[in-house]
Amino acid sequence: MDIFEKYPNSIFLKRLPEDSDFFPLRGRIGELFRFLDGLEDPHFEQGLDQDPHARLWEMMLAKILKSEGYNPTSADDGPDFVIEKDGKRVFIEAHCPGPGKEGNPNSVPSIVYGAPIAQDVPVAQIVLRICNALDKKKLQYAKYLAQGIVSESDICIIAVNLSKIGRDCGSWPPVIMRATHGLGSPYVIFDRREGAVGEGIESCKSIPKVNGEEIDTSFFLSEDNSLISAVLFSGQSCLSFPFDLFGESTLIHNPKARVPLPLGFIKRIEDIWTICSHDSLQWRAYKINNVRPMVG
Image (cartoon, rainbow, N blue to C red; front, top):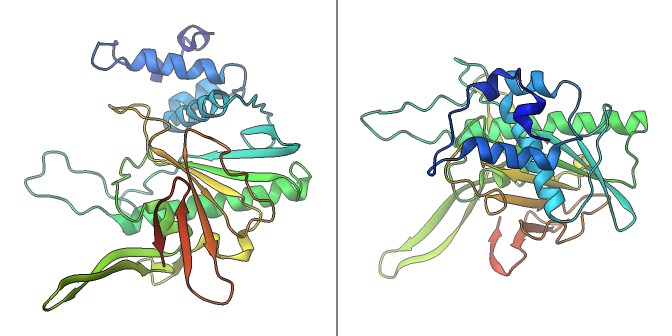
């Protein structure tokens, strides 16, 4: 059903600009909703007005899953989506973190449009928001497990979208892997005579908040998070131009997952598979299509 007909009282939908050849936003949202139609919860219209980015992310996820041929279902209690894959249940819990409270030094500051000088990308604050999202959803999955909604034989995915923060910055290494694998900034080693002779990525296993509290940034290097099989990450916003849902999303596998997610679960999204050594701090992160490995 058409989203504008199904939810005619939504203030968010009413305020959308009319489509143009350059930016057919209403048509894009209508197309995305057709993948979700029938899976939304009873408070979907209210959610559109209160937190549109979160609802749009649910629509985007529905398109990702159905485009792969899956038949997701949803319920009022439990994760947002569940599908069957090779005899196993795969649960997907969606989250769209915000920048944090305005004025909080640990929050992501707003972009100053038209500023006379370049602005630093607040990578540390972005990573803190991602870490908070991962911890929040991990605890939610633990509750689902205790309630019997999910079992220890199920595959559990956290789907994180940064559209509400609006700063996926394209940094290297990716901000999501800074939160899951304790990565820091890239570096280059120079020789006085030969120029650049080496490169790598710093280790950054935690980020300090302003009050001195250290926030762990190695979510997938801990046995404590083995319930989570993977993180589906996207910095893409449905409200942006251009819009590349699959090309700008990444699926990061947890090497310590008690139930691993099969490789190629979503064929149109890049997989990153991490291989860790249990007796050393060395690890490697491989992109499946034989793209360059990252070493930490």
